Image (cartoon, rainbow over all chains, first blue to last red; front, side, top):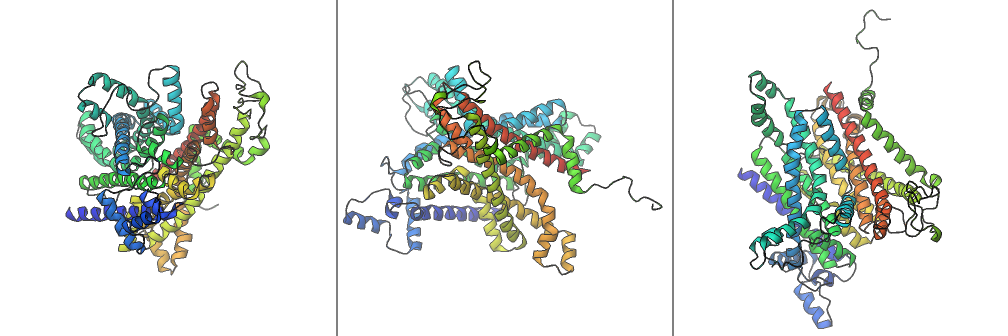
Length: 343
Length: 297
């Protein structure tokens, strides 16, 4: 147990160090001045430049620069944005929760819809209903997410006018930013009509969430279905049947647990796809998340923002992946390494 | 005529033939294959088949609706865009750009991934374990992020976005190759060749690679569908191919300005990407279930 924990901690720290090294080398790889890329401040005269050089220890060897860089990152001094001049840490602190929130709702939808449907299809494998569910999931798995979101905007926002086009909540509601998660913020806010604001926020949420969730749900259905079919073919199910257990007993006691076990590590891969899709969908719905922020940063060639933004997103994704993996290792010690199967 | 027949069947199909039999038995998979072949031929012969030059602008025929609408003409089958370019020709050439570059980048990723994966799979020890684990964790970084960084360093362009997606796909191939080589190395037929004195190079090319091809085809089909979606997504976000080049995502982004008055400029390129990805996924899925059926028999 402790051995596993230590191994994962080492893995986590090594990966983060590799990512930090990548992020540090980006300051040199990006076009323009290294000092400006690193700090986000354009020095106006030689004296200020020399002071900044000393502050970032740029006159020392690379390895000391890197150690200093990691120290600055840990202290929360992430540099400043070219464009807005604001502290990058604050900007990312606002943008990141928005993305995590959107992805979390999409993932939740995918699990709540995908797992039952997948079980249903798997139990009735090679029947008509299985065939329909399987084909539908194949179709929705093949949608390019940016096109799907556009079609949703065209149909639901422009033609029918049932859902708002962009943003997280109507500007009429003055929601103070406390946690960064809009639904929590609304509940915490004092001077607004919470019920009305919540309804409005949900309306804003529904289209982006569905665009992302549709694809994740499809892969969830396929993973669950495959897993259930594999479990159904195993001898202990035949043994349970021969003991005369009822169908629901077999399902809840034997099938469900064993089928869900291999799905968990596969969810780790889903997170990458999920975040990528969320980042693309954010730009279409002007959702103030990290994907939108990064893409605006690349359009404006805001190099300090890209350097830190990349590190932030990669860290979040890698942490989630390793956490899921660790959790999986604890509940299923028989699994040696994590597996990456096909959808 | 031998006195007794060792096998009951008249013919003994090779593993590949048996996979093909299983694959053909599924009508959906076969239809997918036909559509995919069609896309392949469009990609090969687009410049010859396309009725118009995809870049030629014509101010006489701005925003002509597709031919199935009441005021559309048959001379422009899918209508024209805001600059009077023929949408049908643009989509055909777009298939060539998107599909062709996806195939190319998947092949490159496969080559690199298999090479590195084999080396990682045949060696062992603490160092390889550390590299492998870090690689697995780095695999989690989204393609879009890698693409954004590469664009920031090298600038936009189709080739740069291809590099980004290749980089993002390589870890998958490494991972699968490594796992496959590891499990094969423990099998007895490898041990037998080893006892015969085969070098590791001979082991790989004569024993492991022939068995790995099926896995590579399945992984390649998965990677191809990811590559098509990613390349068009980057084109759409203006981070990949640049506007005059008719790439499907770029055509879609171009059509966005006139989406309200000319929805076919958004619908048709999107539908093409969707069909392409669907065909690839159906063929990949059919292939996988054919292999599974063959192995279970």
